Image 1 (cartoon, rainbow, N blue to C red):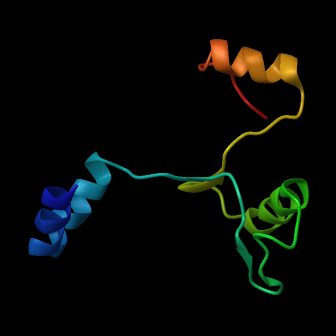
Image 2: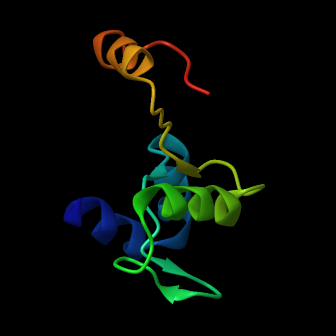
Length: 88
């Protein structure tokens, strides 16, 4: 990773080429701080933080995206056993 960063910083065009060849994605599964509520790590249960996360990321899309989640054990096992399945 350090080598990629050094190469990208070495020349702006090279950085753009590397970004096109090796696109990055940022998958988010929890919200620790909220723009209006501040630090919510300990003050809010996970289910509420998850709802807030989806609200914050609404309309943003890739490369920043929430990790798919389910409370259904059967669906979770399917995702685990068959990671190529689509997730909603």
